[in-house]
Image (tube, rainbow, N blue to C red; front, side, top):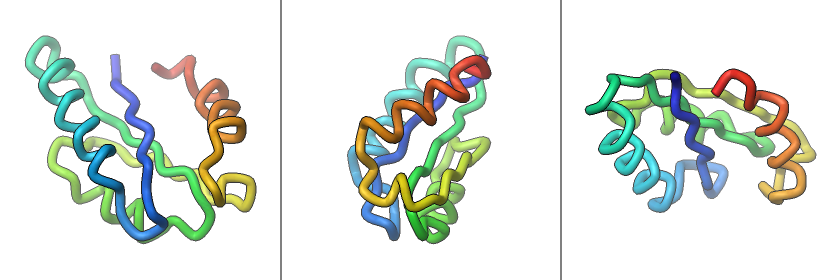
Amino acid sequence: METLIIAEHDHAAPKPVALSAVSAAKAIAQPLHNEPLHILVAGQGCAATAQAAANIAGIDKVLVADAEQYAHQLAEEVAGLVVSIADCY
């Protein structure tokens, strides 16, 4: 089963807390079952962040939700997005 990481970012690159989440996921998920790591980048105009996320060691797939409603990365908006894809995880 894949592991999903939700990237907190500054519209240019993932924030250090997102990198810490990736490190934790690699330490927990990959040694046990070699599970793929996916990262979700939600925002408006977040292509640069998505590209930076794709370059993080250990990330197998980047999911991008680029829309005005995610511009401020509010939990109320992002939660619905996560619920909509949760069945895959």
